[in-house]
Image (cartoon, rainbow, N blue to C red; front, side, top):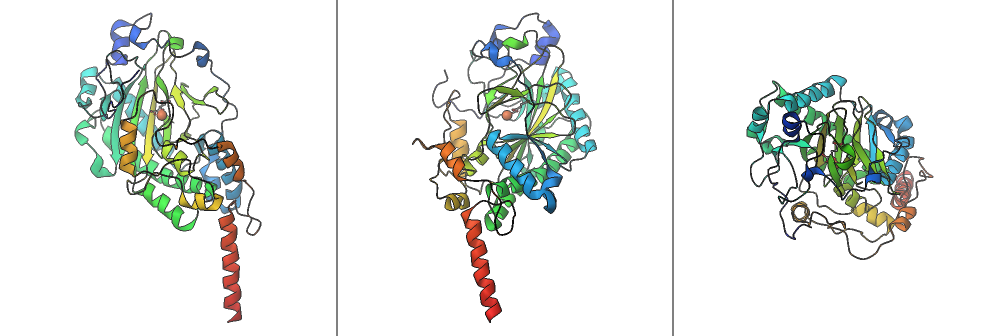
Length: 404
Ligand SMILES: O=C(O)CCC(=O)C(=O)O
Ligand SMILES: [Fe+2]
């Protein structure tokens, strides 16, 4: 049990799992990594069939947009996670980044330690959310770096090795910012957000924060007793994960409580919604719980980009959505800094999101209120009464113009 009020912006230093494996080659898990709290049955990988795949080109093309928006709506509602293909990041761009991240974790320990976390900060090479010396540990080493806006970079923590790591990360984060703005635009449209508010949402991601966490999960002697990354949902707007190899490990919790393995599909990006978008959608979409499991055969490396809107955007349900549905907000609206303050000062084992209103709201009933039929006037993907109302206003306007 964690004490109330522990600040999670820093993390206690922990041994490197890669070093532990290299030096000791253990046959059994060291006690601190044994996760008796995780039921063994949880480790059974479920079939990955049925996980949604979204094609960004189909969203861009007006002739296929409404069908693909419908798929996106269902993906965000059912899973809060999807595989993104045709996302415009070149194979070369992704390949270079994968090579550099793998290259970093292959460096000698003393070289990686040049980027070691400093007390009180999560940035750098180390681990996150370790607040006591008794706490069980994940089978994971990571390096976490702030990338955008560029003035947020702490370059003294950016590895100088492998050569050109820095330029690869710079280019990769710029590429992912473009994808994030497009993805957020279509998530907004799938929710029925339009015009000024859609522009505001996109701009806030254009000017937002992009932070990259690179994970290394070494081979594990007893994978069924360990956890690569404990179950959590991200506090981002959206998160984009790139596998740096072909070893599966990421699992997402389905609505009916099964852990489903997300397959590594070459060239695709796994997008999951973070809590900011769950709140923005007033619970229509989910920030799914997910985790990483480990294996005996092969080290796994992943690169995870957390995309946040700019701090000027309050964290709360979309005003347009609330007006269109007439539903009560399920979440409080907080300033960005208050939202982060509550996140970093939450209790680690808090199951209930810290920003949710305490009153019981029937979320399923609320979802059923938002139908997914297309507009009867323009046949675009749109389901809000507000949208129909706008058609009505435009028609009156046109009538008046014709009469004059
Ligand atoms: O590496 C993975 O599969 C999961 C990573 C993740 O969820 C995270 O870094 O937040
Ligand atoms: Fe995550």
